[in-house]
Amino acid sequence: MSDELNERSRRILEAIVEDYIGTAEPIGSRAVTRRHQIGLSPATVRNVMADLEEMGYIVSPHTSAGRVPTEKGYRFYVDTLLQIGQLDPAQKTRIEAYYRIDGLRVEERLREAGKVLSAISSYAGVVMTPRFNCTVFRHIEFLKISQGRLLVIFVSRSGMVQNKVIETDLSLSQSELEQISNYLNQTLSGLSIQEIKAKIVREMAEEKAIYDKLLSRALELSQEAMSDEFGGQVYIEGAANILEQPEFKDLERMKRLFRTFEQKSLLVELLDKSQLARGVQIFIGSESEYREIEGCSLITANYSSSRGTIGTLGVIGPSRMNYSQVIPVVDYTARLVSQILENELE
Image 1 (tube, rainbow, N blue to C red):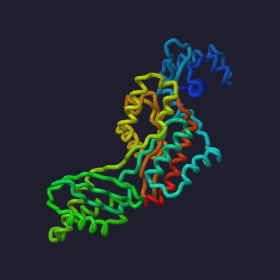
Image 2: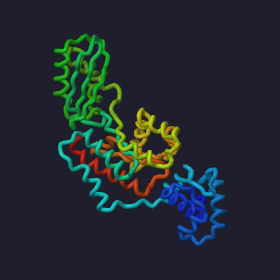
Image 3: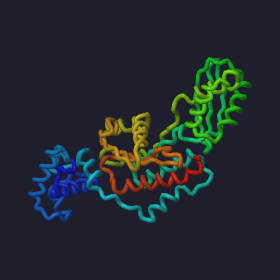
Image 4: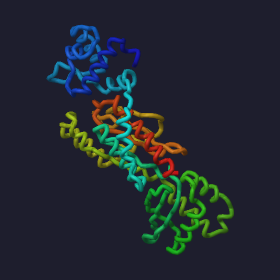
């Protein structure tokens, strides 16, 4: 795509995108020549704009002589033209100030990260908590709910708590469940969930498990409890900020977006995709294959520990967002959260 546009076309597209980000109004050729030192007449700019429109980078809204970027235009701008700004010391200090509260649980710190992102960007902050597979085990407890159904309570070393209901054919008293919990807590503490899964598979394959009834039941229950991935809760902070953007005066678009915020499953999918890549990721509108966030962009970055990626955070707002300012905010916040949580999650 980058070879499709010559230097003149790139400069005019850049001017249109940046002016539209700033004004939310369709951009005409005279506005481009007046605001930017490009050395071209309005007539020449109009011709270039016609070419850009034909190639799908900009579009003319009805009732307006100006042009606005399409998703293709935003993508070209982000990938090829964008000059990412730098956070100044005052911005860094403002972000860091949110994390100076001692005694917060991990979930509370992550909510603070969402509030930071929302406050600094003026859009919605989005944070996905660590999948339990990415945490370190501290404690497990089994509580009998009814015949064949147990409540499993996991606690990570950082203090994150996850609950899950499992079904089992084993007939166990609460006293036996406590013995199993005590055994697992003694033998598994300090291991990651991934290491525990591997250990369970390994020990179940050994013949000694057959002769030790308690061990056999403990392994069977713990395998069932950890058979599926869970966790990855999504926090959304400052969603009301988006309503202040002119794009969301459209009632149907607003309803669609807020249904997405309520259901969260779509955001979980997008944030999961973000974890597969390094660095800052940018999803623009329907590029995400989800009509629900058409007209929006999602900028994400992973926060991590020495064991690797543990979660994702970011900002969601209109596609007409100030990418050059939001990207460094997301990137710096992710690195700061990684630094803060390193000891707590490990």
